[in-house]
Image (cartoon, rainbow, N blue to C red; front, side, top):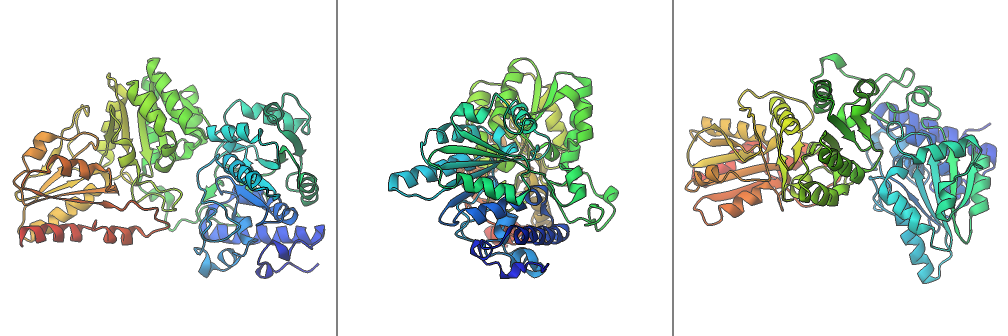
Length: 592
């Protein structure tokens, strides 16, 4: 049989006339091309391999883009992009970075939203369906959501409302029995019963909520999928189509090790081994590994210490082996950041020592819980932020540099910004052993856990107390967290120019050491640097406090923009955050 030429697929209209054997060859070509790119480039592997047939069937049956499909979190949309005019970004290595890893309306009319956070597709699609009904439209509206995403509160809220629409509303639940790691939550026992009974078991969560329910046991079989989607196309009431798929389908090592191959860097296509340029054993410890190591040590010392994740245990360094070692002292609430924060509040109220870890971009989803259930209720829980800063993930859906402005302005929530490995460890240890009534946020400074012998370690971080690392005159440099290294380098440049700057590590970004700031009032210039947005950030607190003082205050930081796939180096240069630029700004103000 002749292979399908993917380069001739410019949209779904190019394969809607194919028969089942041709569609199966199309699926094989899509999967093979995906594997070539993923093994060379990295990306979301398991979710995309598992959804090849379902994506083909959806576009085959539904009249997209007139019919509307909303893909949850976008981890499964590589095949969708390949079949909607973007094949070059997957077939030609020179164009691998032409598209994002997530749906993006600026790329294609087939992408309805920029989506990189989970659990939102059902509510978004319900909004589309309601708008259609108000306008008298007839198009199908389809939400695609994975079983792991069902643990998110907004997924339940969307399902709850969507069931009341009384019109065409199709929810496709892609059940591959996995989140990023294993699933956690009571809903998954219900899904297991449905799979084991071929969709006939009771209770049935979806029927209980008011949906009609259909089940496809072989969710990677094109004929079964097409027949099912055709049966619900044009339906006049809400329906859930539950499909049982294989995460990592077509790559045996991904099928057998689903957690490791949810997302991966480049890997050997035959063995699945990562393609490291050097020896992995020689790589420096990162903050994920350091955090897990420290937490396991504290757990053994104190059975009340609990680590919490919202579906991202790998980010916290808790591999399956470490999770087994931690036992009941490690809790994964599933993809439910709000529940994770409130669980920490309840644990703290009950006398435990909770420490929850979050990807910076994801903790945005729990702002109300940080404000109400931690800060207002004065619960001494600890939260560790990973991938914050400009040096974290750089997709517009996953930006980590809004966290300082977001959290440091909540009353009774201390925001700590360690500059190095030793300071991170000291702040984490203090936050676990302290006896007070405040939440604490500890923001990891980048990824690699580096040492800095210039940093003084404290026993108590409950009050604002800046460290004067170097004492100078006229010029003061305050470097927050990950930006301290750049300030230290700038101070060295200034010293070579004959200018001795006062170099400060602020330690915390929610409170001001007013005594230290008062000592700088008559300086010529004070420069603050943070790798968060300037608006609402730490530097503006300093500038406001010193507003009537003679000293000129220059705040350096990031713009309030949704940046997309930026270069770290270019962004630093644009924002004046390189050591040379910082030194030049200081020299300019000094007239040197």
